[in-house]
Image (tube, rainbow, N blue to C red; front, side, top):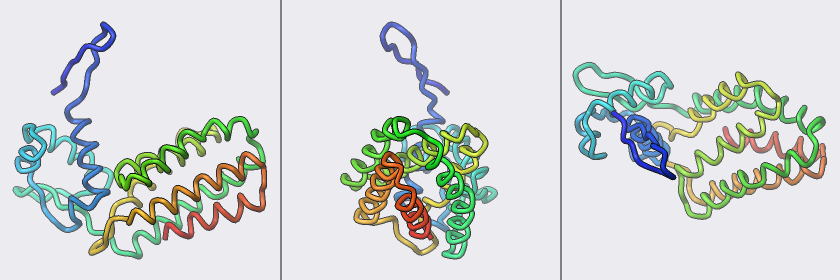
Length: 215
């Protein structure tokens, strides 16, 4: 079901399913939806003030992404991810992103890197607020914008999907502390400034450290 509002004289359509999907993703990142727990469509619908239908549709999307699994006649269980799973994800992300970033560091002009400053600043602001869900979105947006400079949409899509999986809390783990978010955002800022300055040794060091810290 969609809701239609007027904006500037033109109708703006907001997908309820899309809103619920965003809310569920935020709850996953924050740990509000705990790994191993089962949640029903009607119960989540009541929490968000909607019917069970858009919740089930959003949960089906999350099941395709690997965030949850279907439990027949009960609902959806949040996938449990062990430390080795997250370590493997970090390794795959590094294999994909590090070579691309290092190549871009040698070929992209400073002006295009400077255009990414608002994205890095948005991540810094979300970290300063302790907004875990907002930081997760800003973090992926920054990485996607960097990779988009390679001109390969498939690369961006695959990397973003892996990045999203890496942001879900592990089994028995906790959501990232605010200090972790602030440190991660600072790495983005430092990396971007090194890219603008075309300081390749610093870029190389920061990129590798950034992905090593993701393990």
